[in-house]
Length: 108
Image (cartoon, rainbow, N blue to C red):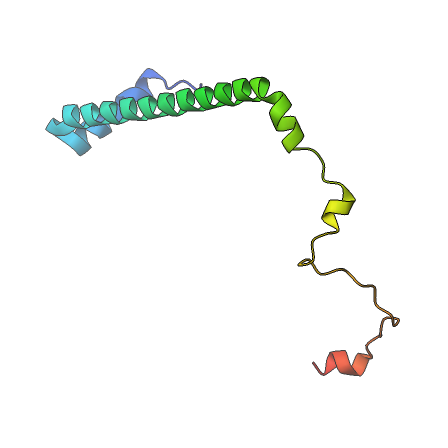
């Protein structure tokens, strides 16, 4: 999974370091670590189940309501789009572009 496998000597070194750091509390630390991993796996499983349930519900709703939703999501004709008065129209400039001289750009 990780692409490497620790040897027996490496595992012993890690075990000795863990014993030196945690001493008698090592079983408690291991138990807390195990609980945390179980909660993480349970949360991930719950998220996966919810995602699957939502995706299957959306797929079933789409297939049963296809005729209704297809009329609602039709493209809007240009005549209906032209009725929007609150959207400003783009107007092309009437004069040619003005070139800036080098003096005005260097003084800025």
